[in-house]
Amino acid sequence: MHLKILLPYRTFIEKTDVARIIFETQGGSFGLLPHRRDCVAAIAPGLFTYQTAGDHEVIVAVDQGVMVKTGGAVLVSVRRAIAGTDIGQLQQAIEAEFLTLTDMQQSARKVSAKLESGFLKRFVEFQDA
Image (cartoon, rainbow, N blue to C red; front, side):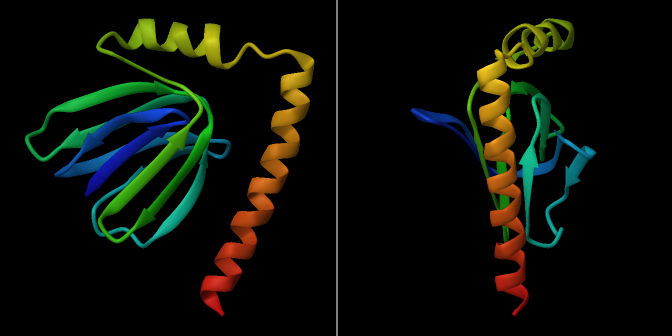
């Protein structure tokens, strides 16, 4: 698979030959393998893991966002991301930076999540038609 992680202002990671991807959604962990059907998912703040064909595993802390898989391409758009090698430090970064929100941010994210889920449902219905 060809993985591209986008931030609002730049491309964070672009990798080819990705063998598997695991990330968090509101419903739990979600995994992608190369021949999985095309899909769209809302990403929750958490650890995003991908493994290259050479068995090299990379872990990235990501804020909320959206993942779109079409064919062999996986496009991930998140608000913020932090790369690192220590899972403990990445988990602390998620708790300190991504999960601590003001009341206004929480309200805005709830409204945004409702809009995104409505869009995703209509998009899937449109594709099935």
